[in-house]
Length: 340
Length: 193
Picture (cartoon, rainbow over the protein chains, first blue to last red):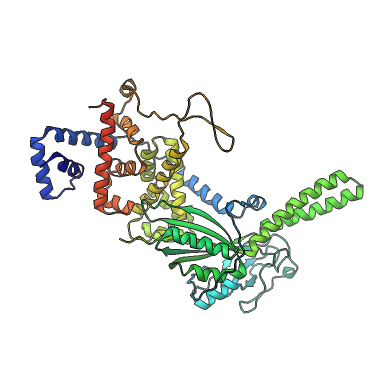
């Protein structure tokens, strides 16, 4: 047998990955070919050296560092700083009307299907009494249609500010009654401000094509989008995560169209509380307004202009938070359905 | 004690402690992989963090078709490959004298590629393995990957096939090619043999 035929077998041969016949052929050839023997020895030596490369133990504290990063990442999504300086790059909007299609999306909810109830204990009032604010949006309707989701209640933090409705003991609101969710710019009953996030995995045939389709869909609906994350297709399943910030009334149509891209699974729903941020900004705005009035009274035009500039910035932050509340974030994990 | 799969399920429900248990279980293996890719402790530690973060973010894509360990290696390999490619793009060998200006107007220290040390340096090294690793480091990320997984991490062909999502036959031929390229690279230097 010729050397070049044997050469291809040397690597699997040294790993014991050749079959009986190949084994015999290699052995016979090696017995009479010093060049191939040498080549095998060199490959074995290199592999052995690499195998012996010393690796220091993993430094302590990895778990803590990973935890810190996870927490940071979670907070980053809707942090005040992010709100103050929204990243505009890569986000696009277009005005073409979307086409609503027929198939519904199957979404498991970690929150109730038809009504989202937040229960919390008011710090200032009697213990044991709960107040529920119940909201019903377009997504709840879709999820209601599909009939999937389990009744589960989530305890949210007590609101930052006092609320008239809560004075003198809490008001029990049952699931049947509906209180409108937080209206941007206005205090809702209880002062709860949330941004909704929906996530779903979609198994697609061609990840690049589907990514383009998602982007097209986002543009057609005037939704902001960004590609958050992607994995190399070379090894492992190719995945892409795309985040869409869609207006609430367009969300159901977009979800329906997304569900046409492939098999939808692993859906989840989350609500990020913006209450604290919102109330803090509002509080600062109130303080600034007082200071501006004071400066005007004192006739200090320079201080007033300075304060007004700050007020403008804060109003920008407030608008951004309101923008987030008015929209729903759809996190789409595209996974390429690799054919065996 | 929970199985990996149970911990994954708990993590997906938001139980960060369950995910931390997975980090504890696999940190040494993942760090070892990262170290073998990066070649130094600092980078290996950073990459290990990235790997676990990426795993946390993509946990929902773990379907249990392979073991969690194999899936994690897949994530780890992807993160390392991404990093290698990123670095490859960043390194622009040019004139030695002038600092390199980027589009942002920053100036970069020039990274001159000459990873093959002279003979005198080799003999100063305690380990031949480190010397050979410098050659491995010059290889294409794909070739480096297969050698790291097989010769350094001691993984079987089947495990590698699962990690790289390819057939055992592909592993066999890719490994053969990569080993031969590495051998020739070293032989060209005529230092070892």
